[in-house]
Image: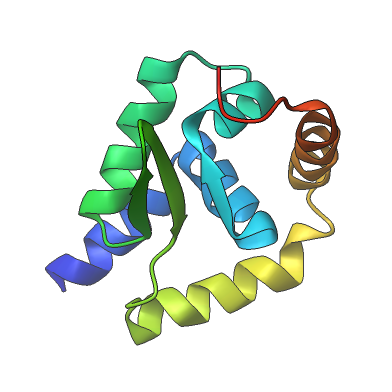
Length: 115
């Protein structure tokens, strides 16, 4: 029961939910990508990513000085079911659509490597 509560609590914050939806749409993002879309400082984005990591929602990969985040490959059945539900409804959530559009625009203009 504790795992279920922690899993659901991780999605109860709008910023964390937006991060999950962005990772689901793109696959892998660095903190600077998320900062640009969410219009939040690095410390805030990193704090939410750390929470998602502790809740087993995201995996981290280091490449040089950059940290890249993706949805966990070892998600439990509950997480996988929730992700499928989110995927079905993401297209009708205006904020999720706006985030995906902003991310696509940012990635088109993004210089090589984060800044």
